[in-house]
Length: 292
Image (cartoon, rainbow, N blue to C red; front, side, top):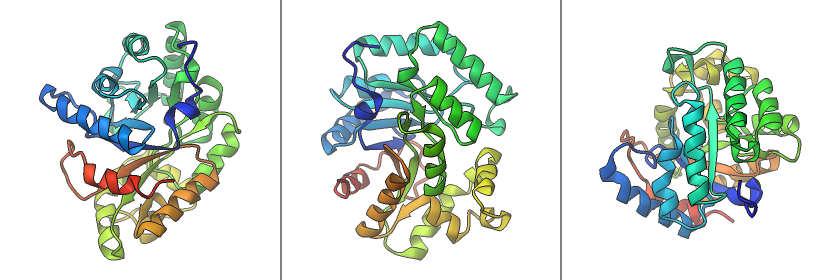
C-alpha cells in the first residue's frame, strides 16, 4: 500500500454505486464505462463497486477515467479468480492508482461454482495466499453474511461488504466487527413512488437471488419465513432489502442502515431492465441529489 493512502473508510466515502454494467469484457464498452465513471465522481459518489464476479482488470478503465473515485470488486469469486493472479492485478493497479482500488472477495454460491467445497476454509486459504503475495489486509474486504465470515472480515481484512441484507443484519454485523472495520452493505433502490409498481420491479429482480441458499438461509436467520421467500419475496421482505418510494422515504431507508452501523452504502439502482450492461445514469443523477 502507498505510504500516503488514506484509511479505507475515508477512501470509499459515505455512498457508492453498485453496478454489473460497470464491469465488462467487451472492449467496445470501455468508453461508455469510463464516461459513466467520470460522471459518478462528479456527482459525489465515493466508490464504484463492480458487480458480478469482477477482477482487478475490470477496474482499470474506471480508475484511468477518474482521479479520486475508489473502485472495488463486489465481488471477486475465489473460485473463478486465482489468488496469485489477483495479487498481481492488485499490485499493478496500486502502482498506477495508489490507494484507490479495493479488492472485494467472496465465496459466491454453490450453484455458480462447480468446485464449491468447504467455502469458509477455502476463503481462509485464499487470504493466506494474498498475505503471501503482500496484498495488505487494509485494502481488501469480504462479502460476509454469517457470523464466522464477519469475524474473518474483522480479523483478516479491512471490513465487510454484505450483499442483500437488512438494517437488522447491519446492526448485527456492526456488533461483530466492532467500530474500526469498514461496514459497507449493498442496498437496492427503486425510484418509484407507486407502491405496487415499485414492489413489482423489486420482486422481479429479487427472484433470482431467492434461489441461492446463502441468501435465503441468512433471511431465515433474521426471522423471515419460507412464505416470505416465495414468488419473488413478500412485501415485508421487499421493504426490508430495498429503498423505494418518494425522496423522503428513500432518505429514511438510507438513514436506517446508517443508524444501524453502516459506514458506507453501496447503492444499486433497480430499474426493471433485463440488460446486464445497463448504465442507469439518469437514475444515478437523481439519487445523488438525495444524498447528504
